Amino acid sequence: MGDTNLDGLIETLHAIAAVKFGSFKLKSGQMSPIYIDLRVIVSYPKKMTEVADLMWQTVHGGESKFQHVCGVPYTALPIATCISVKQNIPMLIRRKEGKDYGTKKMVEGHFKVGDKCLIVEDIVTSGSSVLETVQTLNNEGIKVDQAIVLLDREQGGKSSLANHGITLHSVLTLTQVVKTLHRMGKIESSLVEQTEHFIKSNRHDITVPSSIKTSNTDNKKKVFAVCKSYRERSESCQHSLSKKLYSIMETKSTNLALSVDLTKSNDILQIVDTVGPFVCIVKTHVDIVEDFSQSFVNHLSDLAKKHNFILFEDRKFADIGNTVNCQYNNGIFKISSWADIVNVHPVPGEGVIAGIKQTGLSLGRGCLLVAEMSSKGNLATGDYTKAAVKMAENHKDFVIGFICQSRLTDDPNFIHMTPGVKLSSGDDALGQQYSTPEDAVINKGADVIIVGRGIIQATDPVSTAKQYQQAGYNAYLQTLK
Ligand code: 5IU
Image (cartoon, rainbow, N blue to C red; front, top):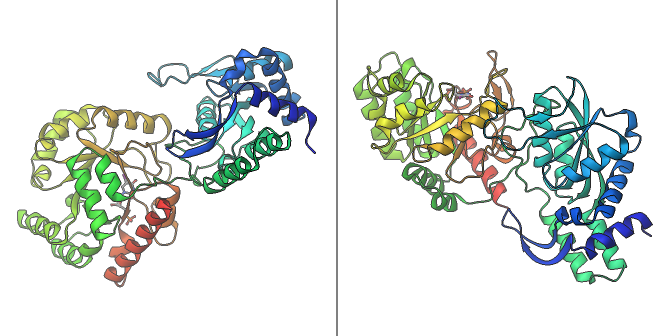
């Protein structure tokens, strides 16, 4: 037996075509047998207030718990307004337009640091929209530990939010909607089965985008899968270097980058020659090489050809455009003459990219932005990371991706490379934080894992590199399932 209130609500949602059946292409590209569009509810004010009342009742005993309610833009805004007016709880409005964020007020309404806010949303799939709103509120010092949603699609949002310390209350679930409509004779049992099958097979999938870090957790448990083979990724990206990298990853079955942080050129060349077959990238810090010479980079470039990998100088340029251009081309290292990829800190602004690009573009080089770091207490978070993504988007002809700790964008042009990887997680004594290859690829959305000491300090670097290659590649295969 169903709850009569809820039965009535489900019947109404079906009648006003907020719930439709058929074959629908979702944003993710997946085909769904059911489509839910709660935006139409604004045309039925009475229903909208009923929905708002039901949602409020579902949170239960909330009267004194929240100083504010805040709707996730846009569909939930009128519902949040109804709750605010009826329950006499002040509302907050989260601005969605991020254009001038940093300078513009992101939350409208009066509040105090430490105030608690209830999030109101229409539908939750992955939970990512709720988390974006939570992050904006958290940035202002507003606390969030509960969200109310009219409908939970049961595709992982509840547990993803729980991982961020947020309890999700829902009035309805997708299963409940289809079962009720079937009981009422409105849909065939085959549709119930199709929907249940759809929910089961799409439970994991969802991107919780970028750098969303709420104040409740350190956001370690994000769920992500790119779900595209290296071959497909190679086809969908623009830059010739990205295409080459994905094709190497495909051919050599590896997403492993070796960070060869050694100080003697012979040691570097020796390990690179033996580990080369298992990696797609060799990453250097040439300024730690005591006996650096032109012949060393010549040998390194020969090994890159011999073993088919790409050279990445982890220089992390971070000055004004003119200076980084000089640093890139000159001095004893002449980085632009041999490194396929370099990285830059976005802190100086777009000039840092322009400075490298001025020389690198015509040489077919690429650049990565350090959008997040693996070290404890680093400042590359939140709006900084978002601004890095924007910067990258403005220079797609040259920026091929990010050094990061989470999936920052679904744009296929950007490769996500994640350092701080070891077979067992933990820290070093100087603030480095490690996650496992599986965690980096499956949960953090890394395309490439960067491993240094895990390999170069191993007693048998070659067999250890193979282990990392297998772990990283198997994790990638799991994301394709
Ligand atoms: N590296 C990091 N974390 C970062 C960035 C770069 O570890 O956030 I940006 C570099 C530093 C080192 C390598 O060269 O990646 C990781 O080495 P280990 O695997 O030995 O910690």
